[in-house]
Length: 286
Ligand code: MBD
Ligand code: FE
Image (cartoon, rainbow, N blue to C red; front, top):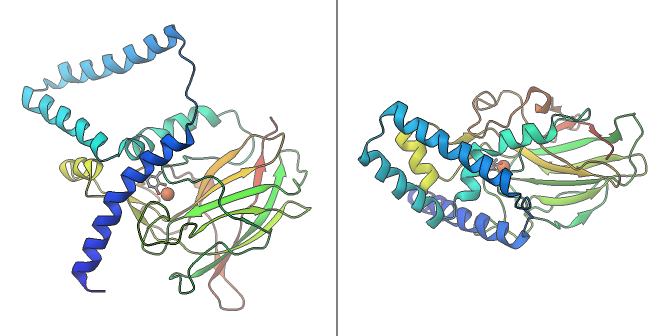
C-alpha cells in the first residue's frame, strides 16, 4: 500500500464510522428515560444555564456563537453525535450508574458495540482474518459473584479494534464480525479467549469531532483497549474495557475512560507465541 492510498483509506473509513454509529444506535432503539416533566425541566434548565454562564463569563462573541452553530450542525451531518457523547460525556454517566458496585470496575461502552456477535466456546478464538496482523493475545480468567461463587456459563462479549485501530462494521473492508465474539464460560465460570492485541485508537479526525480537536490543539487518541460485556442471569451486566501497560495514552485518554483497575498485566507466552494475561470478572447480584 502506498502512503496516499493509506491516507485515503483511513479518511474513507473515518468518514464511514460516524454514520454507521448513528445508524446502529437507531437500530438498537435503546430506550431512553420516560419523560417526567419536572426532571426534563430541571436537567434542560441546568444545561442551558451552564451554556449561558459560559457565554457571560467568557464574553462569547457573535463570531464564536456562529462558529458553535455551524459546528453543531456539522456534528449531526457527520453522524458524530454518538462519538461526541461517548467520548466527552459517557464517562460521567458511567461513574454515576456504577458507583454502587462492589464487583469489577466498569467503564464506558463507546460507539462501536454490536449485539449478537457469533457465539464461541469458553476456549474459542475470536473471528479474525487468516492474516490478521497483530501479536496473539491469550485472554483468560474466571467470572465470579461478589461472594466468590463461580458463575457457570457466564457470557463474555468481546469487541475491539484491529492492528490499525479499525472496528468491523464501522470501517469498510473488514469481515462483518472481525474481532467480535460472544464466549460462554465453562461450568466453573472460566474462559480462555484467543485474539490479537489491538492498536491504540485515534478517533476520526476528518469529521466535526476531529475539527474541534484540531481547533483546540487537543489529541485524538484513546489507548489500545479491549471492550467487554460480562453477564449472567441474576447479576448486573458489566460493561468495561481493559488496557495495556505502558500505553502513552493510559494517562490522557481523550474519552477519560481509563481506571487503574482496568490495566492488564500481560506476560510473554511460554510457547513464544505472543502474550497471555489473566483477568477475573466479579459481578454484583441484581
Ligand atoms: C472508541 O473505540 C471508543 O472506545 C470510544 C469510547 C470512543 C471512540 C472510539
Ligand atoms: Fe473502542
